[in-house]
Image (cartoon, rainbow, N blue to C red; front, side, top):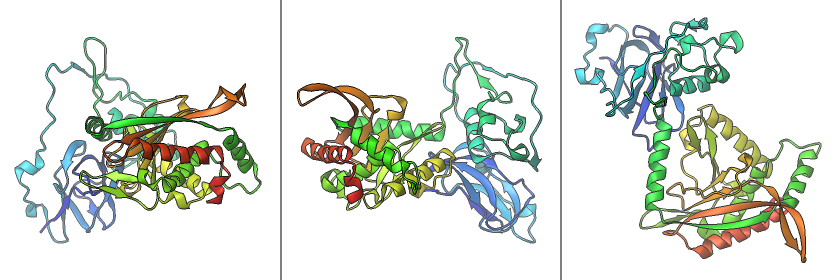
Amino acid sequence: MPIQVLMPALSPTMTEGNLVKWLKNEGDKIKAGEVIAEIETDKATMEVEAVDEGTLGKIVIPAGTDAVKVNSLIALILEDGEDASAINVPVAAVQPQPMAKPENAPIEVKVNIAAPALVSTQGDRVFASPLAKRIATQKGINLNQIQGSGPHGRIVKSDVENTRGNSAPITYSDSGFEDIKLNGMRKTIGKRLTDAKQTIPHFYLTIDCELDELLSFRTKLNAMPNAKVKLSVNDFVVKATALALMDAPDANVTFHGDYVRCYTQADVCVAVAIDGGLVTPIVKAANLKSLNEISLEVKDLAEKARAGKLPPEAYQGGSFTISNLGMYGIKHFDAIINPPQACILAVGAGEQRAVVRNGNIVAANMVTLTLSLDHRALDGAVGAAFLKALKGYIENPLSLLML
């Protein structure tokens, strides 16, 4: 009897995913553990491995199908001695419903431009990095029409970014705009944050912190001969936040309707911008880790996130989130809470400002921090206690090494 290959649940909350690509054709031999397909979740593109060996007898759900329900039949594998006559798939299973076109849909115009030389392939598999594949899927680009600039003709990120989907239909309207289909991540972000903004009673607390001591301390640490990593200001903020949550534990909570869950450690999520959206990988037990450990972990998580290789357990959960837009020059912003968390900290840009010190106006490096809070879970006094502790750690960075 043919072995059923079902749409896997790659995380506890996953209900559907996009079947991006088949890496095997019907009739190909398959070994247990071999990658046979790529599936896009709302956060990353994941590989699907075969659990049994045999022959790929039937691809039930074709590549490029969106919103495939978890546990849906996607393929059948024939065991040794079986042939195609053993396959019996319900018609409904092999005919996924096409997406409905909106009313007054824009006119589709196919743009045909001479294709560049093809890259090396093995069968129908194109040699491309995982990030290049994901970007190509989002932009509707056929990888077979791209000349790779990487080793041995491998397609890399820059090759896809410099291509405008010449082999795919591009949808334009008469008024000159282009409609770009939302990917799974963008849809999920939109739904979750709409729900959060509509249902969570947000309120905001803002505080300014002086950075001069921190910046000087950071320069000294990075200049040490045995320095293993180059620490960023964000690394200090993560550590300071974790310790402040230990000092103000009532802020280290998540809200669950009729109860609040309190945490004994600070699992701090760090928002990372990636192509097509953002993810919030977790630095677990950040209060127990050194600045070096935090720095290495954040860099590793960010690299995996941007490559689409972040496993679900690396971004699901967490008791608190930091969103830092300071590197973009943003002075102040209000972040939206990521439920069920009850707080998110928005970090602005460090900049020189005029401040009054001992009756004199002097220049100082300052940063504005804004805490968004869920009023169902905590009150202003709790948020104020957390920000007071956070300010103390940021303005006295030596204390980060003592705890």
